[in-house]
Image 1: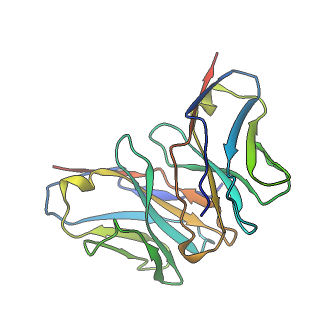
Image 2: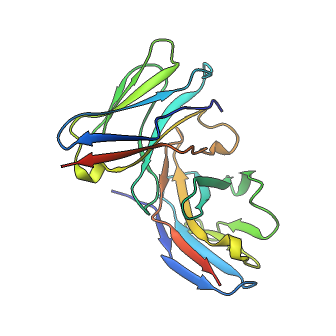
Image 3: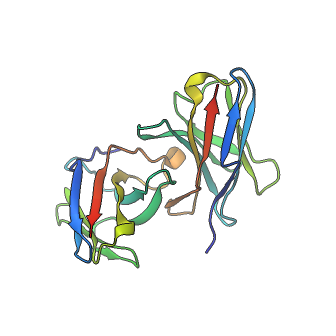
Amino acid sequence: EPEVTQTPSHQVTQMGQEVILRCVPISNHLYFYWYRQILGQKVEFLVSFYNNEISEKSEIFDDQFSVERPDGSNFTLKIRSTKLEDSAMYFCASGSRYNEQFFGPGTRLTVL
Amino acid sequence: DAKTTQPTSMDCAEGRAANLPCNHSTISGNEYVYWYRQIHSQGPQYIIHGLKNNETNEMASLIITEDRKSSTLILPHATLRDTAVYYCIVRVPNNQGGKLIFGQGTELSVKP
């Protein structure tokens, strides 16, 4: 059964460093998403991506964040200068036409 | 997107049916009801969705009341692996961005 994959599973970085989180969505999906979950809190929407452009973003998704689909298979989330409060689980999701979203296992980002 | 109300927690005996209620009294005519679950530390998992007819798949059944103001997710024979937080989300599919807004959900504990 096809699934969304994410790498790395755990990323530790120093405050102020850039990180790139990678996702491989399900191959025939057209909609791509990033969500995050701070420990003990709700899953929060960050950004959606369709037709090679951002279709919606939340207030969390400020200028420090960017997304890219560089090669038609990978979908990346970049945080330019990490802050302590960026520590969270980051989930990638992809969706079909009827918008069931399928989530990856997540990347745990720890900012020190 | 319409707001939903779910009980904070529920218990269920292993092998019995788990019935998880959701109230969505302000749902509009083009909004669907989606159910997801999140097993501890994993990515959210799509379960089922529907508009007004009852739906069934290999994981669960979804019963939507005739006035569409509430619904019930039924896990017919709960197992220990069904212990998770279950989220009822009401939204229009394919709206701008297609984001999912997660509430607090129902924490289901399946006990031996």
